[in-house]
Length: 417
Image 1 (cartoon, rainbow, N blue to C red):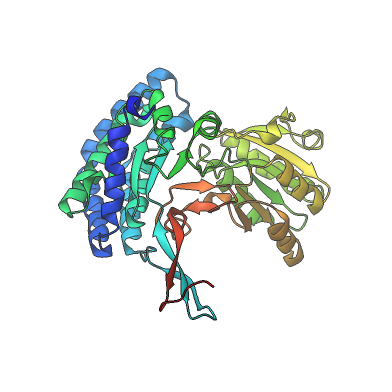
Image 2 (image 1 turned 90 degrees about the vertical axis):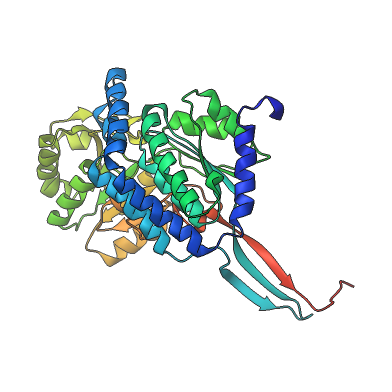
C-alpha cells in the first residue's frame, strides 16, 4: 500500500524535517516565525489577489455568506495572522520543559520532559488563516507539519504556505518542516490518513462530514471536535444589560465559527423580562429564531424541532428554549451540546459555580461570550484546533497540546534485582 501512496515522499521529507528540528534552537525557530510574519505583511496584496480568486470561485459554487466570510482574507485578518506568529515567537518554548522530577529511593533521578510529537497532519476547511496558525504552532513546538486545506481556499493556502517555507529557508531552518498538499483531490485526505509510518497525529478542522470521515478512515491518532453546538443560559437573576450584550455577541459577531452560540436557554422567570427585547434585536440583525412551545407563547418565531437542539447552524439561526431550573439547563447542555463552549449569565455565585462544575464542556463561562474560546484570545498565540476530546488535550490546542511527555531517567549503575 505504501508504495502506491503518492504522498509518501512528502511523509519521508516531513519525518526527516521533524528529526532535524530536534537540533534547531529556539532562537532559530523564533527568527523563522518573525520572518514569516514580516513576509505576510509585505505580501498582503499578493495574498488578497489569490484570495479573490478563491472567493470568486466560491460564489460561483454557491457558498453561503457565512462560508465566504470564513474564506475571506482582509487586511485585518492578514495582520492578525502576522501578529499571531509574532505572539507564538514570544511565547516560552515548551520543548524541554520539566513537568515533574523526583529521586527514587534507589537513587534514580526520574523526570518527565515535554517533547515534540513529531509529524502532525492538519486537515482543514475554509479559513486560510489556519495555514499560518497551525504551521507556526507546529514549528515552535518542534513538529513538522503536512497541511491539507479545503479546495475552496486552495490558492490562498498555497500562497501562505509558500511564504512560510521561504521564511524557514531564510532563517536556516528545515524548509520541509512545513509542507502543503497542492491538490484539491479528496483522495489526498485518504492518502494522508494512511501514512501512519510517517505521521504521528491528525488534527482535522471542518464540518461534521470531514471529521466523521477522518475518524472512520485514519490509521493515525486523531484529536478533533465534531460540532460546536454552544449554549448561553440566562439564569433567573441574569443582568439584562449583560445578557443582551453576551447573547448578541455570541450569536452574531461571527455566526459561521465553531464557538458561536447555537442555542439560547432562558430561565422561565427571566424570559418575560428579557426574551422579547433580545429576540427583537436578533431579528433586526437578520437572525432566524426557532423556539420551544413556551418561547413561541412570548415571541413570534418558527417552531424548534428535536433536531434543532443538536444542530450547529454556522449561520444566523438560533434555537431558543425556556427551562424551569438550572438543573434543566445543565441537563439540556450535557445531552444536546457538543462539549465545546457554554456560558451562564447570572449574578448568583452559587449558580455560577454549579454551572462551571457540572457542565461537561471544554470551556465554560460565567458572564462572558462563548466567542472567546480561541487560542489567540486565551493568550496562546494561536490554535491548531479546539479539541472536545478528553484524551491528550482539551479546548484550544496550542503549544502544550502539540507536545508529548518523555521519561528521562539518570542513574549511577543501578540494576533491577
